[in-house]
Length: 191
Image (tube, rainbow, N blue to C red; front, side, top):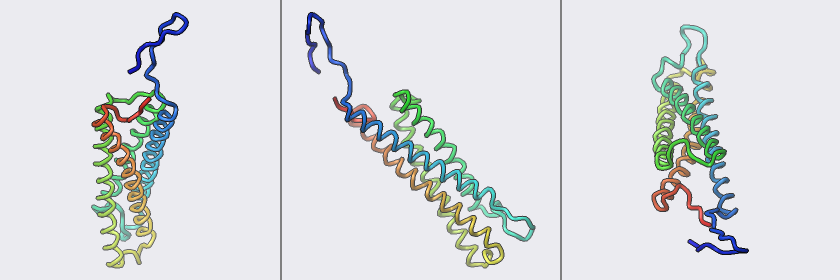
């Protein structure tokens, strides 16, 4: 740390300001996290909506709620959409206020841990849904109700896209955790 300077009879202490390059990188990093979280929200919500609305009238036609894997896809998409919406809000709060919603140590581990758990939730729902969709195609269910199978496939694809963006967000959260462990702060911002 630099010592105070005397100029024109006034003692000036150096401020702990960050260089404009570091602040710009930090802002860009935070915006990238918001973009990934918002994309995860959009794809997870679309996955849930597509699966929840995948019902055709008629007692002999397949319904999404008749299949455990499709219920898993729908509920996982809804849960991850809610989580991602919360995280988008927390990230916007952090960008606008310059502070985290929770204390920094809690926020870093909360983001990283939950990103991991919910990414795994989407991946496992997507793989279960894919397996069920393939089974339905093998037993000719899709020839009877092609629209049902197409809408199920779209829902599963949206869920897997949500997983991809949540995975990217998890990588950035992991970077924050490592920075916190090494530097005591979630960002390595130097003067």
